[in-house]
Amino acid sequence: MVETGIPKLDEFLGGGIPKGKSLVFYSQPGVEGEIFGLQTVHQTLKKGGICVFVVSSTIPDIVKGQFKEFGWDINLYKDKLFFVDSYNPLIGAPSNEKYVILNPDNIEDFNKTIIDIIKELPPSTIVFGSLSTIMDLCGEKETIETVRTWNKMAMLYDHVLVYNFTAWPYSEETLNLIKGDLFNSVISIGGIAERVIFGQYFGILKSDWAQITRKSMLFRVLRPGGVKIFIPKILVTGPFDAGKSTFVHALSTRAISVDRLGTTIAMDHGHVDYKGFSADIFGTPGQERFDPIIKLLSSESMGVFLVVDSTNPSDFIRAKQMLDITKSYGLPYVVVANKQDLPGALTPEEIREQFHLPDDVPIVPAVAKDKIGVYEAFEVLIDRITGGI
Amino acid sequence: MSDYAIGIKELDDAIGGIRKGSNIMLIGPPMSGKEAILNYIMYHGAVENENAVITVTTRESAAHILDWFKENMLNLPMERIGIIDCVTKTLGGAAIENENIKIASSPVDLTGIGVKISQFFEEFFMKKNTQKIQLHINSLSTILMYSNIQTVFRFLHVFTGRIKAASALGIYVIESGMHDEQAVATLKQLFDGMIEIKSEEDKNFIRVVGISQKPTPWFEYEIQGYNIKIIRGN
Image (cartoon, rainbow over all chains, first blue to last red; front, side, top):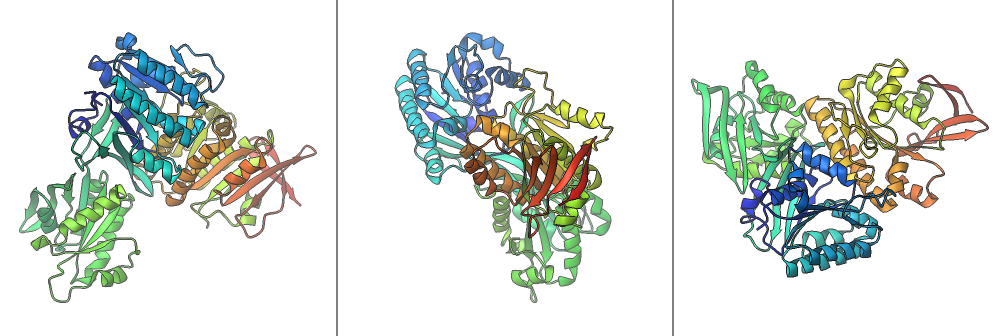
């Protein structure tokens, strides 16, 4: 098994990537997917393996510098790490590397070198720094057919092939092949966006050797350090007595509240594990004098539940004000129309109208005390946060 | 009050400002002062309109750009400035990232450039709470030297879309006469309008096309220090 060194990912893959298998890191543009390939290189070397890194979009010296930024000393493994340089020839500069692709816009040139490497070296990990760059230069169809050959050859010679791929808007056919049958495993790396990308996650789309865990992990990239998992924070806010604490407790596997005489004065805190997504839930107090706490809590959140009492339209102005405090940070949000069981409760559509909410803001009807609608709301918000994986 | 402006009064008056989410091509022949105009738009956007400005530079180092402002005695509000330097590293220079400067590994590394753009967007939008952001790419022509037109089109397709989603403004510099007509026409599909520059008999002219109903007239301009001075419209 070759480990990626990415926390949780090796566990999800059943220990790592078996010999002879291929894996692609399929990244949405703008998210830090390239580190996944680098970390796999470093982990392979650390475990005593041999590694080949195919550099296509910059000079190999810069890639060596990137390892250093992450705090990984590749000089320790000089005789076990080889670079394939396809960038210097592109800009007409000389190369010092052992393997050089003289015509980087010719897939045959690539093919010859990679096949030689596959035949020459003992079982190794071969990492492509940017499959998309190769595809851009050599053509989509040509590259895909050649990659197919490499993956077959790797199987025969017991190598592990790892590709970084940026999912630019290529033809649907190309993208489907890459997500589909071209590789043994596909790891999707995406961004959480609401106007701008503000969080990153990875998850397994496909793996033909491990039972797939439908889990997405949020991560950050640290220099030094590499990929680190982090647990997102989700905010629950809303006017006084809308049922925020009840909602937090209904949703959480465990929860505590800091309150006095039954009303929350500092916050509620809970933790939820649901459908492979885990998150910390923070409930804010509803009274105006605690507004600074909302600001404080929302600064690092990934999304917001706005809980409203469906029977109490007079509170909607306050609800909107509270939303504005959190929304000033541009977070995705879902409105939870609570207390739907009480007489006089407005329907979600009536609430949308009274609230002047845009059509694309989800409103989920709920009865928090009976746990009705709470998981639905969670799923809708996670969907909003991840853009639906 | 419109969302974004060029900063040259005569042009802004003629077009009535630029809508948020717009993507604009700045096109002109070599040596016609595109760099000075872009710097001027950057300065005006950051200082007068208090926008954040992200500049992707593939021609000059980040240090060089900042020096230009220093030489012209202009104080940039650095908390709203982000530069993505795609030059320094490939030239083997010492390239250190800081709050204002991020380093991309080369003009070919569109994936890396994209990551840096997204990071600046997040920093300005989420952390510094600056809602209005300008993204300047100088220039597409350099990027086109290393990557083919389809590749650049895909890259721009993604980022012009992000500009719209973020209600930002995108300005993309391109050299006229350097690429075949068809390449420029392909890229034009992605833009809402263009700032066009031409040189005739040692005189430079500028106009804006596509933002207002009709193209603005050609304005003759001169570069005086950092200032873009309109001499007359014709």
